[in-house]
Every structure is written in structure tokens, then in C-alpha cells.
Length: 416
Image 1 (cartoon, rainbow, N blue to C red):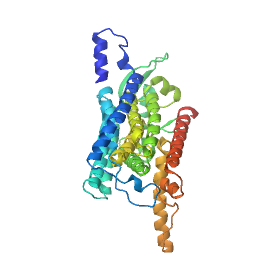
Image 2 (tube, rainbow, N blue to C red; image 1 turned 90 degrees about the horizontal axis):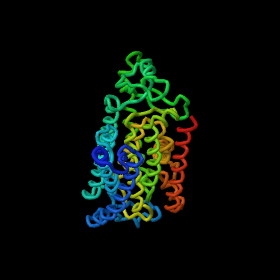
Image 3 (cartoon, rainbow, N blue to C red; image 1 turned 120 degrees about the vertical axis):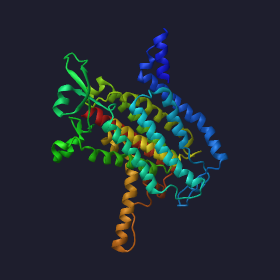
Image 4 (spheres, one colour; image 1 turned 45 degrees about the vertical axis):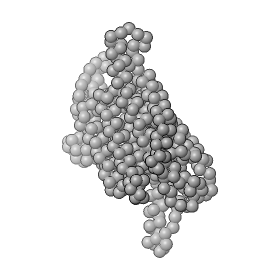
């Protein structure tokens, strides 16, 4: 809405800054501030409303320090995050952009899954919440939609030279003269190319992974691509959910990841930077700079209330949504292979649970009694059991997340 308003004013009136509607950085800055304000100002009112509705957290006594004090703290605070993302995005981003539409769908759909789970737990007094199968089904639907749009929508393209596109046999959507002095023709093409870190060439085509299918590889690439996207969405959203166990932990880590995604969205949508850094230039992806700015602002604003001692918990409404958004953004920017590094905290939390459960089952079968690798999983509870204060655990996890974020930027944007 802001884009069209500024464009209208620029077309019909002479005023200072009449080209602001074209500036991604200006609109992203406004989106970030708007998101931050919404989460901080309206967040307090929503928390009071949750108090009145008695939407309190039910805490199981696991013998963790400070755990019982959290009994009754309002949950379902993820509503604040969702509002702080959606509202600024609707006002500031271009709603005719396929990437924005996909992210709005992902946010609302994942939030609805988490909200349903929280609603059942809080209002139906069913501690199990939404069944695991129902959650997985919802995540599969989100992954399926993202994968199919990327495969078949003409709005999802990659820019390359026409000669390169013809040699590779890609479907050409449009072609036009290059802005470079050489006058070469460039094209926007349909492809399953994606960026790969630590490799000088910098990209790979998933169709090439199906070389054994011969000439049918490109038409049957969905066999590989669709399950991969579904797996990434499911894995990251569940990992974010597991990470949400201490005050401010998942929120702070997600905010740090969001800051990196802002950078990736900007350079991927900028012809000059993408050429210089040897990464794929993705036409129209620059609008995701605005969405990622909203996402980062929402996380930091929510942290105002979610930091220790938390006045509100995000619940599955927030944690599943954060994970789903991060996964979707990485996939759309064709940076999904950076997730293990960028989301290293999520990965460690997820792996700690998998290793704990697997080792316990294995030792129970072999020795008759289950043994544990960690004192408790997910990983942050292991440190709690060792007597480390909650604030120190969260702060150190944030520092590790920041280190991984910088490492991701340096290795991907410069070392190659």
C-alpha cells in the first residue's frame, strides 16, 4: 500500500523524495521500525488480554531451576510476532510479488498450526495438544506449496546469460540486452539451480543430481526437489520449536538469523552485488528484504517481553512460525544449504534430542536399561541440569548464533 501511495504521489505531484517508493532500503527501514513498534506497543496490550483470558503456561516439574516460577505466565504470545510481521508487510511490501505472497501464506499457515496446538492445550486442557501427525501434515502442505510454486510459477526465475541458458536447456521466460558494456543478451529462466557454499563455482542444479534419468531428469526433478523442500520446512520448524525452552532463546536466535537473511535477500536481488559475489541473481527477490526486515523487527520487539524473566511465551504459535519462515526464506533465496551453519543452534538442539532418544533406546535393548548422553534434552536443559543460570545459557547461545551468522556471511559472500 505504501509503495503504491508513494508511486501515485511521485506520478502526480512534485515533492521531495519522489523516488522513495523505488528504494528497497527505505521501505525496509520503515518496515523494521513499524514492526518493532507494533510488537512493543501492542504486545503489552495483548499480554494483558492473555492474562484476562487466563491463557497461562502449564509447567511440568522437571526439576529445573526457576521452572515452577514460570507457572501461569501467558502463552500464545506468538500472536504478537505474527501481527508484527503481517501488518507492516501488508502496508509496505508489494503484494503482487510472488515471494511476498508465498511468505504471507507460510506465516499464516504455520501460525494457524501452532495456534491450534496452543488452543487445545490451554482451552481444552489437553496437554498433548495437536497430534504429531496433524502438525507434520500442516508442515508438509507448506513445503509442498513452496516447492510447486518454485517449480512451476513464471514469477520465480533466475537471471543468467542467454548463451548459458540455451546450453543448459533451461526454459527461457524472457530475454533482454545486458546492462554490461559487452552488450550480451541475458535471460530470466526457470531452473532448480541453488547456491552452494564453499564452492568457487557457487551453484548446482538439482536436475543434475538425477543424471541417471538422462533426458528426463529436468522434467522429473520434482521427485527430488519436492521432498527436499518438505524436509527442510519440517526440520527447521520443529527445531525452532525445540529451541523455545528458555526465556528469549528462540526469539533472540531467530532475530540474529533474520538479520543475515536481510543481507542475503538484498544481495540476491541486486545485479551488481550478485555478479560480484558470484551468487545467483534472483529477479524480484528484493521484496523479501522488506519481509525479512519485518521478521527481524518482530523478533526483537517480542524480545522486549520475552527476555528473562519472560512476561509472555510465544508458544507453538510463535516457534513453529519462526522455524517455518526461516526455512521458507532460505529456500526461496536458494540458500538452503546454508541452514546447517546459519541455524546451527537449531541444529544442535534438534540433534541433541535425536541422539538422546536413539541412544536411550539402543542401550535399553542391549543392556536392559536405557542410558543417556545428556543429563536432559534439548541441549539447553542439559546446561540447566549442570547448574548454569538460565540467563547465562541464553546469552551464550546468542553469542554462538551471532558467531555462526558472521561465519555464514563471510564464508558464503567472500571466501568463495
